[in-house]
Length: 388
Image (cartoon, rainbow, N blue to C red):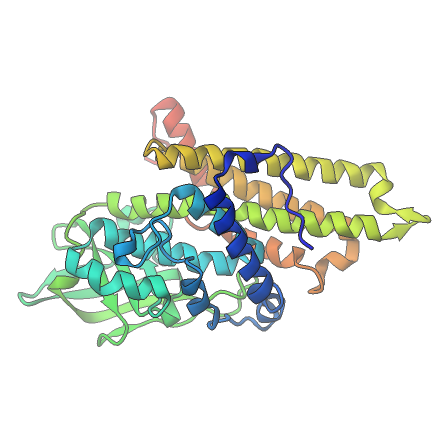
């Protein structure tokens, strides 16, 4: 039985509703994800049957209003959902992050009422899958220099370019694509599967996020209806606001991966015997476990406080960057230390630690790299940009 660490009684800061939501997601992860996810990761396949189930349990768009199919929950609820999903696997949390923060959120925040009514209910149930197209083959941390562009052709827009490292792209029904117009201004376009000239090839041979579908979005003279332009945003502010929401979810999500590693390592250390006693009795193993629990506790408090600020609409992008960077690094270090406690067994598929470790190597890079988030904090401290 999974025993989640809560050394500083953070649960006392949560409402009964928060705990109920977390419990329902935790039960689903235990029932539907944990028994199968190692096999899917080994096969480099995505468990597509889980998408509809995630819609049923309210994992998509939890903070989107109920009138559009969401649950109308607060941001701490969203964070707790992400924690439990990533305890299952980063790929499962990534699907929910993209669907919620990078697809449903921009349609809700920047879209027309017609767009909200058309897309959000289908995305909330998992009937439709969404993708987010910002990163390009030659422009990752520098989206302002994107090459993807569109031209006004009178009764439609003509879209050309390519996006890379796109979660859900091979199965996405609608993609929120950021592109420049003739004046070089960035706008969001809703590109649907089946539009002529639009392809989404899958990326293969990944060592990380092996149970996730990753691919490209390629646009070769794609005719996009004018009503598919997101009307209420222009410039990079739009995609960056989406990334803030996704980064916030990641700051919570990776705690779940760290907790799963810790729980696995603790159990193993109490059962595994060397020199006629459990390895948990040795000082160096206790040191590892104590440090791991300390870091998880710090991350929990950081995420909870950030969630409180976000609920009050006071969380800054720089604060979100700090939490994303700190908590992902924390989780990756904990995965490595937990693997050491298991010794050689830690690299096998019998335990989840190596899978989490490989996944977190992607999470530490996507939605803003580890180094870029450090520079965002540096800019906030000094007022001086090191990007230019």
